[in-house]
Each structure stands twice: as structure tokens, then as C-alpha cells.
Image 1 (cartoon, rainbow, N blue to C red):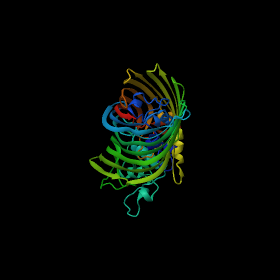
Image 2 (cartoon, rainbow, N blue to C red; image 1 turned 60 degrees about the vertical axis):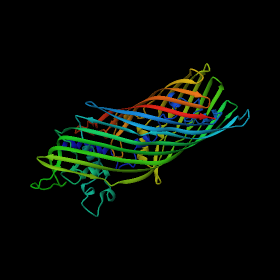
Image 3 (cartoon, helix red, strand yellow; image 1 turned 30 degrees about the vertical axis):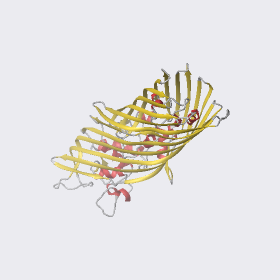
Length: 545
């Protein structure tokens, strides 16, 4: 076992930071994403509305779309979501299902006619939009482990220069979580016997060693979302240039529970034998079985503000061009969290079992989402058809985190390393069968935002350690179609949307190490592909007057 652990000591000293980061790049990315959500007409054309406008949710993509309105509009949209997730590893495939009902969008646009050829109208409005949903549930299993979470945490403790004395809970005048410098995950792991010390107070070792085997299970349960409340203002110049701007207020609520457990055989576990004396760690280390689970809870809430502006150009009735710019959303956030463990170790008939937890704590920080640029074009075909195309650029590498004392340099450096720009392509079409009925269809594709260095496990990956797990993005696509009905001032639309998102789950970072001859090797964490599918039925009711 000592030979195996030396590999992690080398890797940890070379690659680990001195202390745990306040917030990870993966959190910033999650809070920067936007779903394709809005009115049924907008969604049935895959959101390709940047050059069309005249829609209660399209004006959130291109504020210039508010200038298209010639009359007032009020509407509301409902969304019934049937979601499923399938987690695939080399030896297992596990599926879960979920059902949710949302109010996707609601809004009002007022139009004021000016009876002017130069400025025919000025419009204003207020919209609510569910910008993103965090509701997701998946679980999986990885058999035939090659290493253990316990060894990963032991390597962290070694690299940070921590000691068992920094982690001991039996002194009423010393609380290691607040009075010491050890990471909270390291303290919890030591007090749960997930890591142990053998020959000295600082010789941390995990449960995995020569001859150890086992399996891991994991589960993630998320809820909450991002709601946008937007104040819009715009107008029309000579029926050629349509302009608009908006001030948005965003509200975040994100709850996440992650569970990770290992079942190990021939593990190096800590048990107490009253006939044997105590070593430096206070326990005897023997070969036996280890079962433990780590549960992380986190809740993030807060608000932010952003600004958007855009134009639509209509040189002729049959052709339109749209351009929009979105500033970052500047958030002030609060994060509440705790971690708990359950464990049972069995060796030579001796059993060591129990549970432990960190305190429930909170911290405050600020973050900045990426800036976005949208370019669009649309054509009106034969007076009955519309074909529209959008391209959106998202500068993910510009995300930022900090607090009142300054930036989080490690987190912001990781943002630049782990993420690259996203490119979103949307195409949609509509054909008016009669004066009252229309059919629509669309498709959107978003490229991966994860850089190769983290996507393919080419380097050590830093997380907050609570949890150590993370996901990297692959592709995201939507396939959509729908129907619309207009009768005088009343309209109703229905859409069906299929969403396909692929990510790769990793329980903790790859660990790189050197052997005695200086050769570099890597221990890969438990890894699985997460396929998340959503099928949405979206219904909009509205009146124009």
C-alpha cells in the first residue's frame, strides 16, 4: 500500500493548490447557461427569431423585435416537460424519469402610434421568461474501479500539508472546520475513516491499495432555475429600422444534492482492537471491506442585472437582418452548503461504523456571466412562408467570480483553461396553410463549451472539493415543430420540443503521477456518459389589440 500511495504524494505536490477554492469554474458555467424557452411559436421554430421579432419571448433575444409591433399584445405560455436521463458506463446503464409543469413566458407589449412617417410608433413592454431550468435527476454505477475517492482525498491532504491534529474533533476548544487550515472535505474524510494516518500524523492514506477492488455508485438531484424579468423599450424608423433595448433582472435558485458511494473489498480499513494498541491515527489498519457514502448539499440564490440592445433591418419586405448584443449578467449570490457521510468498515469481525458531517455554512460572492452576440437573417417567401436563421456567440471564457475583497484568481484562471466559446446555430421555418392556420419546424445545435484539456482528462481538474464531481459538456440540440391558429385578435400556438444534452460525469479529477523511473501515469476517476432528454409540450394563449 505504501508504494501505491507514493504515486499520489508526487502527483498531489506537483498539481494541487494550497487551499480549497471558494467557487469552481463549473458553477459559473452552470449559472451562465440559457435554455431555449419562451412562447410556443418561438420554440416551434427553435428560437430562430432574431430577425423576425414581434413575439413576447423573441424580444429577449433581440430587443429590436419590439419595434415590429403595430398593436398591443398580451400572452402567457405553459410548458409540460417530460424528462429522462440515461447514465452509461462500461458495465451498466441506468435510467431515471421526471415530470415538471412550468409557466415559460408571460408578457405585455404596448404600442403607441405617432402618425409619423419617420417614427411610426414607439413601443414598451414587460416580460417574464423562465431562462433556464435546473431540474434534473440521474444516477449511475461504475464497476471495476481502478482507484478510490479515498486515495484522492488523502492526496489532497498530503499536498496541503495537513495533519491529523488539524482535523481532530475531540478538543472542545478547537473546531477544525473554523479554527484550522485543513480543507473541510479532508477533515470530514479523516473523521469518517475514509482517510487514515499510519506511520505519522501527516501520513494520510486512502482505503485503496494492492489487491483492493470494488464499485462506485453516484446520484445527482437538481431543482430550481433562472427567471428573467425584462423591461423593454423600442421603436420603428421609417418601417426599415426597428430598434430596441431592455433592462433585465435575473433571479437564481439552484438546489443540488450529490451522492457518491463506494463498496470496496480487500480495502485498508481502520478498526479498533482493544488487544492491539493504537498507532498514530488511533486505529488499527487491516484488510477488510469498506462501504461509505458522501452526500453534498448546496443551495445557491441571488439576483443579477443585465442590458441588451438590438436592431432589425428590413431593406425590402422579403428580407430582414437582425443584430443584438447582450451584456453579462452581474450577479450577487449566496451559497449554503454542508456535507455528510455514512460509513461501515469490517475487518476480522471487527466493525467500525457511524456517520459524520460538516457544519451548515454559507458564503457570498459575485459573478459575471459571458457576453453574447446574435446575428440573424430571415426571408419571407411567397407571402406565406418564413425561413429564419440565427447565429449566437457566447464568450464563456469571460466568466468571472469575486467578492468585496477582489477577484477569485484561481477560479478565473480555471475559467480560461476549462472553457472556450460556444457557437449556437438555429434555423426555423413557418408556412401559413390558410389565413388562420400555420405549421412550423426548427432545429438548433450548440457546440461544446468544454476545452479539450478538461473534456478529455488531459490535466488535473480543480473543483471546490464539496463536491469533487464535475461534468463536461458535449453537444446540445433541439428538434422542434408546432402549429399556430389566429382568429381576429386572438391567437394560440402549440409546440413540441425534443432536447438532447450530453455530458460526461467524473467523480473527481484524474490524478497524474510519476513512478520511480520518472514515467508519468494517470489514475482515472469513475466516469460515465450522461444523456439527458426532454420532451416538452408548450402552449401559448394571447390577444393583440
